[in-house]
Structures are given as C-alpha cells and as structure tokens.
Length: 165
Image 1 (cartoon, helix red, strand yellow):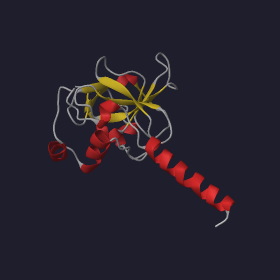
Image 2 (tube, helix red, strand yellow; image 1 turned 120 degrees about the horizontal axis):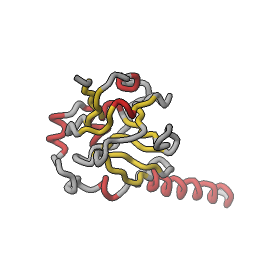
Image 3 (cartoon, one colour; image 1 turned 90 degrees about the vertical axis):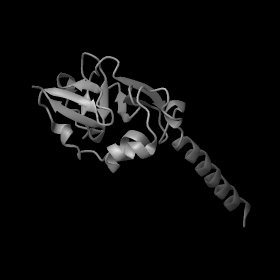
Image 4 (cartoon, helix red, strand yellow; image 1 turned 120 degrees about the vertical axis):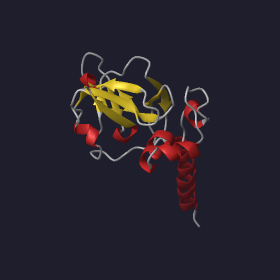
C-alpha cells in the first residue's frame, strides 16, 4: 500500500466517522424523555394511539414524503391540531401554499408550539414541536409571507384538521 493511498483512505474514514456523528446530532430536549411536557407516554402507549407513520414522524422525528399529505392542499376554514394530543396548533387563516409539498403556515396559535435547534443532516434548522406533548411537527424557516416572514413547514401526518362549524 503506498503512502498516498493510505492518506486518502484515512481521510475518507475519519470524514465518514465525523459526519455520522454530526448527522445524528439533535438537541438535548428531543433526545431525552419528554418528561418536561404536560402529556407524557412511553413509546408503547404512543404506538397504540398513532399510526406507524404518525409515530415515525411525531415520536422519532421522521419526515413524510413531500406532496403526500391531503392537508397540503386543504384550504377550508378550521383548525389544525396535533395528531398525537389534539392541541390546537394553527388556524386555517394562517395557512398558505408554499409550493414545498408540505402544509405551511405563517403563524402558530400562541403557546401551541415550541422550538429547538436541530443539527441533523449536516445543517442547522429550527425544529418545531407541540408544546403539550413534544411531538415533532416539522421545521420553521425565515422565507414565509408577511406579516411574520416565517414558514412553518409541517408534516401533514403530524396534524389533524377540524373544519369550522
């Protein structure tokens, strides 16, 4: 084995080890148990009340595929709730078509969501979760419409829509 090949292979191995550590890094709040939330349940109980896809997104920080949620194109009047605990999160008046393939809102209901820093997948983003049960909802970005300039890009499977009466 020549010296150049050894050095190249070493750089690849060390780089892969370091990037794996960074890709899997999440905030402390989301890697520990959700004991700081009003509603807490062990995974076994969440699995009983959530579909497998809801569990993957809400409890394991997954992401549904873009353009798969019927809520992306839902524009009727009503309220969007957390699919896990049914806390009200967004009202329909704050929903807009972001073109991303996920339901997007420019303003949550006051106190309904909490945010943490998400450093997974080689980037830093602001993760949005339900302030009541800690369920992962999506991420918020600074490219939304007025008046807030925010885009709360939510997983449709993490939401439940209740039409206005």
